[in-house]
Amino acid sequence: MNNQVIDITVNKLGKTYWLPKEKKELKVLDDLTFNVERGEFFCLVGPSGCGKTTLLRILLDIEEGWDGDFNLNLAKSIPDVVEYGVAYIQQMPQLLPWRNLLQNVTLCRETKGRIAWPDKQGILELIEEYGLRGYEHFLPAQLSGGMSQRVAVMRALAYRPQILFCDEPFSSIDFVTRLHLLGVFKRNCIEGNVTTIFVTHNIDEAIFLGTHVAVLSDRPARIIEIHDTGHIGSMDAVATREEQGFRKCFKKIWEQLGHDK
Amino acid sequence: MKAWAWISIQLIRIGILAAMILVWFAAAYFSTAISFNFGSPGEVFREFYELLTRQQLVRHAMITGLEAFGGLMIGTLAGSILGLLLWYSERTADVVRLYIVAIGAVPVFAFAPMMIIWFGVGITMKIALATIPTFFVSLSQAYQGAKEVNKAYVEVLTATKATRRQIFHKIIIPGSIDAVLESLKLNVNFALLGAFIGEFITSDRGLGYLILKSAGLYNIPRLAFRTFLIVAVGIFFEFV
Image (cartoon, rainbow over all chains, first blue to last red; front, side, top):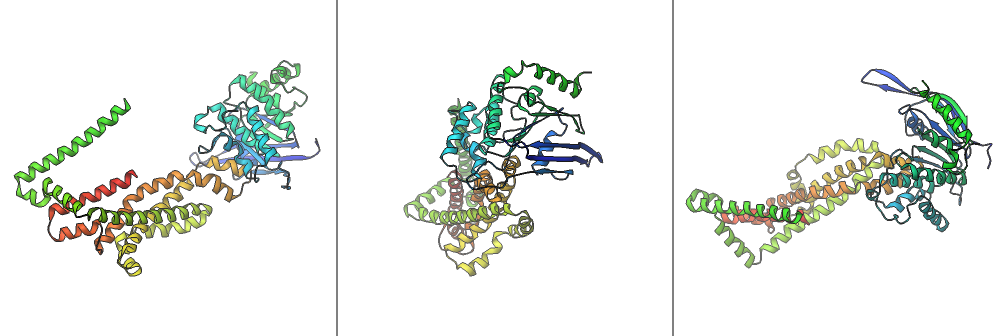
């Protein structure tokens, strides 16, 4: 792993909405500055509605108008190499209702060209890992909310992105399944050497997955502290919760989120 | 339970029809004014029998059906394709919209003389008249459908920097199938209307021609029956 390359640079990024009804400005992001190196897993935790999703949308170039600047250091597409590009896991799964599970998983990957055999094999293994084998031909309407969310995660991973943006991708998956899937997801991202920004308000999820956890304040969101959590945790989400470092970090973040008063 | 609900609905429908015929029958029996203006059920039925046995009915109905069907297919297909393609360029769509609204607002009748000059007085002219309104309905329906495809679906692919063509292919077309089918349904009426107007203006066959002829002869029962035939053709298309 080459940890010298910086994939994502965010410099003094800010975002202000103009509210036409109230005739005033609403500042949601304030002077965010951070770097994410290749292969790092950068978690953002903060209170609801503090602008985490807005940040992702700015980085994805979907949102219009912002202050400051950012840069994504994206590799150009190279023949026979599929690990490039950006993938996005939305808060809602947004599966195409006319495609079955397997076709939804391959949707993004299809834009990179025909899916040859080793990739096809990989996608089937992915479905197996996320516990949805046997459901390949189900339509989204026949899947539960948690299953749909897993499909959205697989759709992004099957794309084999260089950079991955996640917006609470595990929020509607039940707790037990989630503990298991977090381990799978962490391994997937490490194996694919994916640079990830992961938005959540679940503190233990963030500490377990992340190499860094940035704590954001209430609106307008500012970075309170970026914790280095790379040394905490194995590939097992349950065992990680027992670690001394995990508990200390959890308590610290909990306090920083303003719950100590 | 469901089957029972369906049966009861059908029974009520048939009951209303039977009641209407009965009232009509009684009214025509007791009043010459009504029997002159509306005909009577018996006479209308005799018309049906006569037309069927002389084997004209099926032929005329087929011709009108063919005209409407031809226009429906051509108009819906061409309109839908162009409407979907308009999604590609919002600016083009903005420019073109005014013209579509303007031409779409012209009653089909106004096109008839021009269509006669272009296509003559035969079946082609009626197909053309059925095509014009269906084309515009499908055009705006398909464009609307393409525009209203869930933005979040599109964002999944814009994040991965998919080309506009890939998005069109994988999301916009399958996503607006419903709107296109909806326009096909709407268009049944417009296509029939176009075909009839064509036949009313000039024709020597088709249901419109039959109606016109019986009206000219003041043959009310025949006229009434032939008007029912249009209803029948409309219902037929609605269910196919």
